[in-house]
Image 1: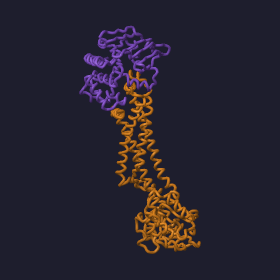
Image 2 (image 1 turned 135 degrees about the vertical axis):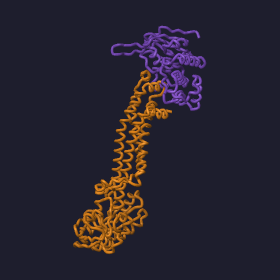
Image 3 (image 1 turned 45 degrees about the vertical axis):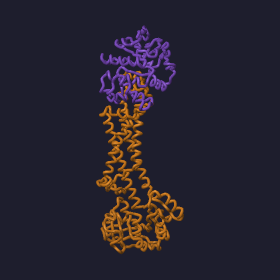
Image 4 (image 1 turned 180 degrees about the vertical axis):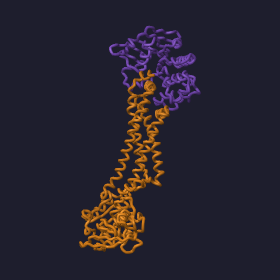
Length: 229
Length: 405
């Protein structure tokens, strides 16, 4: 079942007289349960595409549909609500809330959604266990390693039971062991809970794990390779 | 949870928050202490004015206050005073005869207002007897005793038991005079009053002034509850339309406005302090927002709406302000309570103050309503100071903010 359909997507930046086509006519569809990596050199449009998929940036033209919802049709407040309910984010530099513990960071989105306390606590503990951080739930980010922080970020991204998770260079700041660990966890969540992951990455280890690899260059898809899992 | 995040965010940079909290605390300490000091000062002046000078309500013959003529008296004033003292709202009534006259000692003389009072009745309406610091209250001298103010005693260069001569125009228009002996000297906080008023017994003055029996130039009414001032004034006006009935607010409007002026002064002072602190708070919060661009972008990306981000920053600013504000308010109240017993001695400036009727020792007064208003002003400052930094935060595009290093 297709979750994301992208049609003829463009994103153009104007810098005085020069026009830069960060995304230059992309058509793409992503199915539920995919484990997809978007790769390409710096400036190829990976992050711009991910930002538009996450509703953080508006396309210059073209459409993005998530399930039956066209993102461009949503008002700003509706878009925030849509993101909260449907999209999980994992960022390159973790971006956890430093004053909250691991548990509170994971709970935060559910709190914004107004979920009951009992449900929040159960899901948080379940997710922290899934990412291997049981016992560290009361640690603040500063007391966790980079890999552990990114695992909290993954748990946070999944807390709201999103339709898909967007991960922008999630392993860029991690060592090999932490990367391996994180990828295994995400792959496990993908396989067992059918969670759709879309990564932008330079990291060959992520590419190796991905079931589908989309290669961008100059804002265009130049290769879309599905592996047999 | 947003409140918890806002509170914890304050302590991310304890030094910076500590500095602004200390600044707010000092400012609010000054504001609160100044408020209780001013309140105490004004209340003392008010109390001195009402309890020793005017009392609550005065009744006169309608034209008496135009030129203080000896013949413009209330007939059967003493009897009327007895009737008024039966009213349930009244706890004391004193009929007085008052005559403008000259008083002379062996050394010099001056013009004064002589008040002929019935000592026991006067005790119920003013605190004159309590302010007699030398001698006594019409007790030691049986013939023509007089009580004068300290300032007047200094001016006339007289002491206790000294003889003074009073010269006045009697009811028949003849110049007459009488010798009186000082039996008491009163010391108020109001030098002007001390210098311009003397007290003798009702009968002595009425006899000297050839006044008909039982008359009074003014009837002074003291109420058991100040809150009933307006209603009793109206009631007496309706009951005695042939007399002029005035309460202390009308008789001495400057005293009536004193309380309001004191409050106004306090609020203006506190608002100026908060205004200047507000800029410090804005500066601190702008630094906070600029340091947290990436985090704010992340919060907006994961679904924290702009209103919630705004609310979080507003809460953070308000909690920061309130923390400093409450510390300052508690310190200010603590200092005020500590000084409530002993008072603050301004005796170095006392002479100047007493010339204007103000006490040299100030006893701070804590008024709950004023403290609540100050707390509200502190909260309001926090809210207003948060608007600009919070609005700035909302202008960030989440995608760009996340990429900020």
